[in-house]
Length: 540
Image (tube, rainbow, N blue to C red; front, side, top):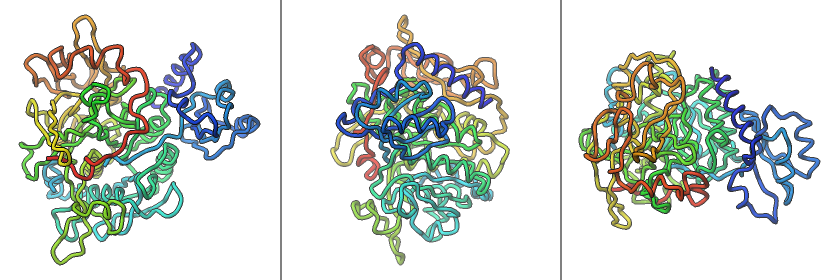
């Protein structure tokens, strides 16, 4: 099934290129024309030595091979990109883009504490954390079974982000049970793809994903956590980072990805809609947005974080995020002396009689490992579950009770933001781990996220499902069960069984769906995307 889907995608892409579609990413033209360009070149089939020799004959240097996606990182001299594009074996050329991280009540509000009370800890399940590395911490010393760097140097976490993410997944709570992770018995495989300043590249992340697949059998890696991302520049069918996460999914690994922290970004006049980053835009993976636990155990007062990126995705209009999870003001392990520790002393959490080695952070980076930990619990209980079955159960059981709106305040600027609880903001709902673990629906087919389609005749937006998906027509359940049936707006159906919403939503139809919208057809969120202060400071 996976091979047939992959073959069909390649056939469609090749056909499109043959009919005049460019083989070069739209942001390639932004590379300096006077110096060598560092690009990722994807080939239609596995490149051989002769393939590389042809490129080297044009003065191209092969910097790194990426066999997972039949590609290589190349340094291309000025004036040679056009020649490389004419190579009939080349499928697509894109820059080696920069990545950034997507920066206590997560256990309780996600209902992980109930699962732990019944003895489920994720024991034996391997979770690959592709992030900024890991530095020894007493809350994780028994969980980390493998460390490797894909960016040179050591696998130590000089930045702090990776250790924090790992702690949310599997912190043991050795000092305080309040800071126990979601799956404290899980095995952690640390693959460092972000450097000491929190930066990385597509190539490093792809190499780390490839390494996770290679180590799958040795460490029973069933989950990959990607609390990182960058802008969307082309269809996920061509994006090298998306192609890598799909390979992992097809290898039987559940890939959980942060949606991004651009939900307040109105630079395109979309009120933050269309800001989901890559590879969170890929329909196969589980994309996670962030909720605020409001410093209470109860789920009833929780609200969406206004900075959580909203869908649909650029170019392909994939309906994202898939669900939301606690991600605001989350306390987790971090060693002293890291960049984040030094730069934000007010976020340090001091425990009486103990060296303060915990840190408070916010963002979809923190919500993502909550879901990754949930997956580990599910797979401990039912090891035979496929990635699509895991995704389907999480989405089906997600809580769909929300307010119509909520207001958040940025702690730095004092600016308030109004959030609406539509499908493109909260996906299929709020993570409920215990409900997911007790669900017994055995779905068949894929759980690919649908796309959104705008009807110009009646100004409505509907869900469009690819053939063979779990929640498509005539299969296990209808769309009304997964996405809910309640109206959030009296004038626009937000979670209808067919129409996502009508004209009475938060913007005029000409703003988001008009022909002038940048994120619909071209470059959306480029190198200016950063993890920002929202990840450290959170919001009220």
